[in-house]
Image (cartoon, rainbow, N blue to C red; front, side, top):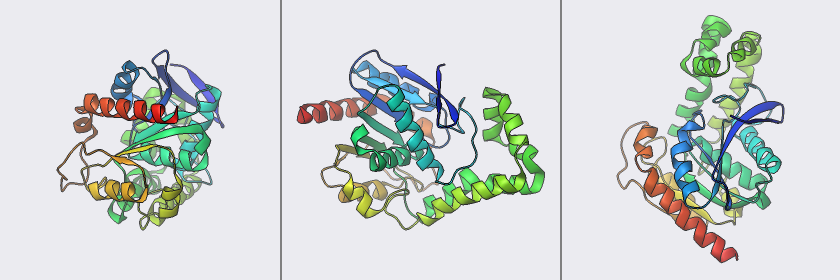
Length: 282
C-alpha cells in the first residue's frame, strides 16, 4: 500500500477508480481504511476516483500521540495535505462518525478544497461526548497509570497497530507515561467541551457557514442519535437529509457491520447526490 509523508507522519492510502471527480471517504472510530473500502469500491464503480486512507494513529499509518489541537482537527489537516499532494482538490469529502467530524472540520478550515460533504452517523450531545472521550482516550490513560506503556501496548487497539506496524511498539514504549496521559487528557477534554454543541466538532454558527452541497444521513443509536443528524440538517440550510435506518435503537452503538449491509444503497444515494451537485455547479 502506498504512503506519503504528511505533516510528520507516514500516511497509508489507497485510490479506487481511475477517472472521474475525486471523493475522499473515511470510516468511523479508529477503524482502518478497510472499514470504508467496500463502500468506496461501489462509489468508484459509479464513476468516481475515491481516496481512502489510514489516519495517523490508525491502521498502518504512523503513531503520533500528541498535538496541540484535537485529534480530529489534526486528521482534517492531514487529509487536506494528502489531497493537495495527490492534486485531488476540490473533492467530495465524507465519513461516518469520527470520519464525519474530520470531514466537517476540513470543510470549515479549507472550504475551497471541498466540492461537497457526505456526512453519516453524525455525533452530538453529552452521551456521545462522554462515551467517545472514554473510548478514545480515558481508558488508555487508566491503563497507562496502572500498568505503564506496556499496558497501553497490550490494549486491543494498540495491539492491532503494533501487528500492522511492529515499530509502533518501540514508539509507544519510548513514551513517558506522564507525557502520554497529558496528551490524551487534552484530547479527551476537547470531546467533553463539545458536549453542548449541536454536533461534536462544530458550533451552530460554524455549521451555518458551510455553503457547499451537503448530504446528511443520521445514525440510529445513542452515540449517533437520529435527532442529532436531523438537527444538523435543520441548521445547514440547503443540505439534504436521507434516512437510511428509520428506527432509532436504544443501545449505545449499532455495530458498523449493520451499516455495511447498506453499502449498496448508501453508495447509490451518494452517487446520485454528487451527480446532481456537479450538474448544478456546471
